[in-house]
Amino acid sequence: MKRHRPRNTSTKRQRVDQHMRQRVNERVGLYEGESVSVHVTELSSAIHSLALRAGTAYSLCVLLISVGAPIALRADEPFRPEPGAFPPVEEARAYRGELVFVDHVNRRGSLRLQVDGHYQEGRLHHFAMLPYGVIRYRGAAADLRDIPIGTVLYGRFYLPPHPKTSAVPNAKGNDKTVPAENHAILLEDGPSFCLREGKAWKLKEITLNGSEGQLVASLDRKDGGEGLGGEHKLTIDGSTRIWRGRELLGLDELVAEESWSKQGQKQFEGQAVQLALTWHPRYLYQQFHVSDLWLDEAAMKVAAERQRQRHNRHIRTRWMPAWVDSIKYGEFGNATVQATLFGGMDESLYAAFKPGIGGKMAAAENTLRTWWPDHDGMDGRITAVEKAAKEPPLGSSGIQIQFEVPLILEGFRPGRIVRIRPQNWPNVKPPVEETVRSYEDRWPSPDLFQK
Image (tube, rainbow, N blue to C red; front, side, top):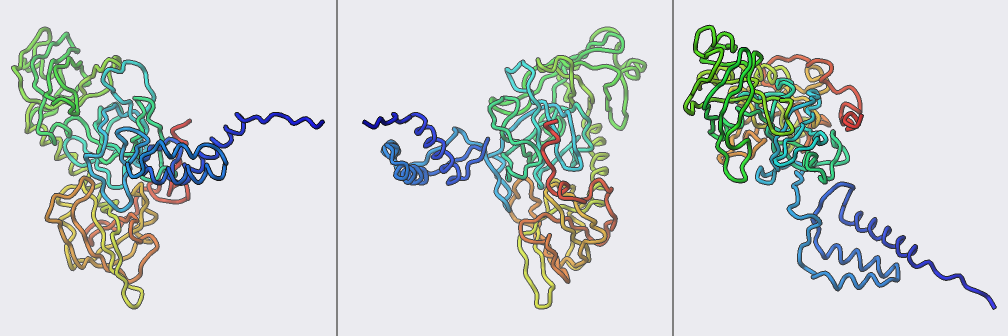
């Protein structure tokens, strides 16, 4: 009598499980570490077809799903920006952290996030700026290169728009210190955050002991709001820059003029000040050191103006970033490119774009790097400038220009990033390390952060 070997049903079931998960993932576009929302009709269809092919009882799973009701694979799902659209800022997640690494050429870096109630050493949160992401420092537009390492920053983040080409590693979000949202639409230091919110620290007292001391200050914060709330004791020393009016002072100078006592305490009765915070040895317990202290509004304006001028020079020599909305083709190779200028810049830069003047447009990448803009850019003419009547979304200037070129380039396709200069801006080549010279330069590898 022929003996039959018993079936290993558990192994077969595992193979079917693996096959079904793979097929469902392909059906709904799920990748490792991604959180997506799908409609149950898609899942029902996928499961049902796989169950029929597998010949198992998995078709019973369909009965457990109410057809027509949406299902989320993760509660409170993060938001992923769509190409060609500025994402709603209310969908962004807010995080605060200390800047520990910067790759300014590719507009990416790392933060050590400060999570309320979390007092253990965490991993670094690697981030990349979205092409239209806004950076602010000392109350003015900035570039990552302007911000010192150690500065406490506030940011708004989304999931990566294109996970497969992300310039930073994709995160699953299981670790509090490494959330899945790692592409920033806004990154700003403490003074910029407070100025935008219309807030200021209330300075209560300063206690000095020679060349070191501490100050006590408080900042209002609504329940669930961003920023440091309540009263804090912050350290100061000879490295702290103190701004008063148009003066930049040190502790020793304030002591020498007898404004502050070298030993003892001075009361300030809630004087409104701005503070820039940086790393402290007890950072795990949310203690901070004051790198800059602005004693009055005039001092803050002076610092903001210096930063504004610095960034204006940066944009004038690298050109205004924008993305292409549409192209209207002419009869003999010429075309009119309609582009939206990115937001967050100084108004004087936008004012340089006027109808009827010449200029040049160059192809750029998502990092805003260009190839050889002064050489391979396309000369043209600005034919129209339109400003949106409504408040533009964060990342957009609300300004659309029409730029007529004699020949359309591959990099001018709708959805692509470009840089544009009006005719009165310098026609210069940026530093060689900022230009695109290879495949790796176009899509920077996230491997840098895994070494």
